[in-house]
Length: 219
Image (tube, rainbow, N blue to C red; front, side, top):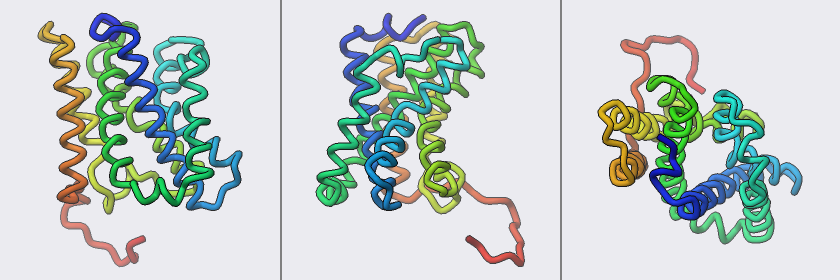
């Protein structure tokens, strides 16, 4: 079952562009904080927005990747770059709103990535894994390029991967029981979105190693 069977192409494209734009904003803001030049801001915006989907498409053999065949996908991060380049103090002030849209993009990309991977013949487990990679891969690449430990791996950051995993898992369960519909896929998106919002609101974090003992100072 392909995603285009769940949503009309125009609706899906609009949702993708919105998610790409918000992810690109987060990448561009990090570049500004790192004092990158305009080229560096654009690179981080593009990588953050398109990295996860690009990785997914290369793994499943969907070549050339959508990031290079749809001009809107490629240009949207550049628009985000211009917005942040000129208006970053104002964008920083609405960071809370950006995080809300980022959470929505996380859920959307987890679901769309899982569905697309399955439509290319991957099994359910691999499809869910690629759904997760679609949702968080760009953020990991962003942090690596910015010379930071990826937020995904840091214990002191609110849950990010877990909501995406939950959304992707819901999709593969719906596929397994043949109940994947626009409603159930939308429910998976909303579930991942709400979990991420709750994690940010209550600072939910993943546990560290049990009975952790170390003489090394924490970083």
